[in-house]
Length: 387
Image (cartoon, rainbow, N blue to C red; front, side, top):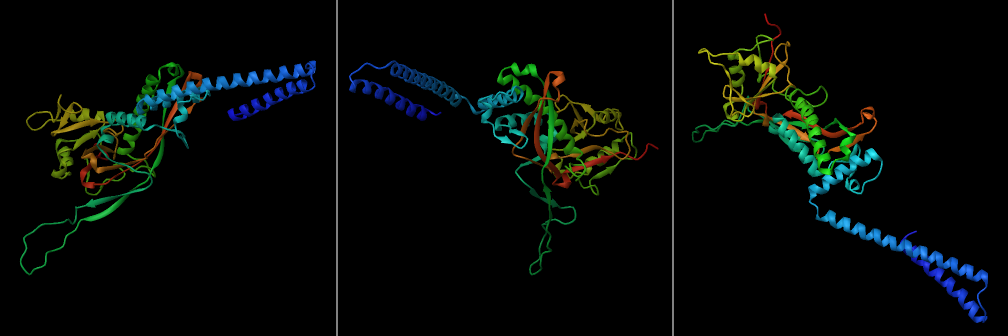
């Protein structure tokens, strides 16, 4: 019964008590035992109602204080509290007032904005391929213009009076970016649930970011058939592909040829991406003067430079030694278009790791990626044999 109902019932009980007294007064007699018992019963019920209302007032005051405290929190602090509260409530089955602030989605709860931003920052820190790509954070299907100057482009030339200029125009096409659902599963110990909201949230952020970074980087580089195209699935394999002579080795001349596939205008921000084993093979290459091509450089982003460009190693690329496989990608990675969903969700799996005293935390998201500027990225593919 709500407060209004309790107050109405209290008034009715009070009226019944008054009626018992009025009856004995009118008849100029003392109350009978039955009337006294009824009067005391009504009085006891009123006392219980008063006690209930008093306790309700106390709870209201407590909630007002908690709400005031929440208002004084920053958005990030509220999100940390809500995020940690959701994880704990899904494990314990006990609803947490903080976790009720999260919006429920198809795959659990929508990750708060400040939390997903922290995850993205970590992913960018772990994967430069993701960081350097051009991102479109738009819901639904995205059509991105794709320009091709390889065969016909806008030109500037001297003109003669009364003579028409030859018309040139760039070819434009579009690439369609949709969204493919992925889930990054992280295992966390139930003992961590006893940690503070901040420690629990940040631990989960770091773990989820590592899982997401590894998966996304692999998709951006290699893609998956009928899913994300990635660089390998959408680059210009006619004009921007260098076929190596052998499957297990590469020459200095081939590296130069790969670099020269990229127009000079896009060389400034170009980098090499390769497997660490491929880098090891390249480290042994020397120029005609006996100088190593790949140099240890403390000022370089990842410790090495090759032909004046930074070298980033990724386990997601196949190493030299496998026939007819993309082994090195070179170029400006802003030529890769990445479409992401604006919302990501989190789901807790209680049973999956129950025997390990752990829970599964799944971060759900959507992604798609295709090359939007084919002149910015070139790929070296290993030969079919070593003979």
